[in-house]
Length: 118
Length: 113
Image (tube, rainbow over all chains, first blue to last red; front, side, top):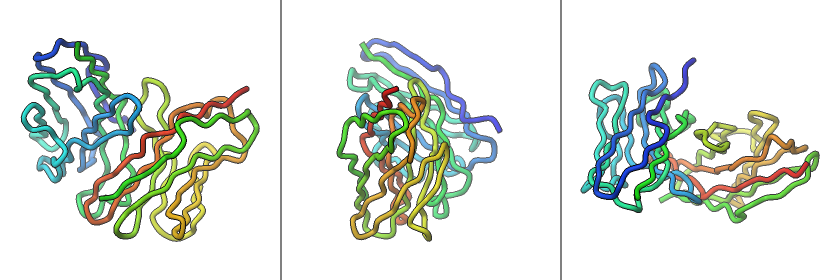
């Protein structure tokens, strides 16, 4: 079974520039998550999708971050404009079942995209 | 909101010795508890989970964890550490109500050969 794919693996941009990350979850997984992991901290959920709908984006800085999952499969996370404090690893994860029943299911993580904002 | 505390930044253990990584949690309802491991430049890998039932949970790579409701703890253990166990370990808790997974800050485990 193929794992969660993410690209690019590394990205360096200057502040105020924009950047986009792509994620392809495990085939058949209904739920997709984007996390931000700042150095020395645990991952923090940014947004959770159930198929192509958003079920939790309460921790997403909506003035600069946006995400979509148009066809309920792959997803894109965008930052525009980037700030220095956005330097982090952005992790995508997926789980097999839907919201409301997925609490007991582990999440499968991709390798992440390491973003450096200079 | 649920939360997790991993009190130690780093755990050093000699190869072959028992390994324990501590985790305490706070949730409003019944907890779903998870341990993940992260190797350098890799994503998080699932180790084990507690949902219900037996308080001792066995997982991947010889790891196990003990759920203690009275102490709100879910410590990760391995009877004999290997050098390859050197990695970053994260405890996480999910509240059934809001379905969000909250991670601790992580523990760096260093196994000394």
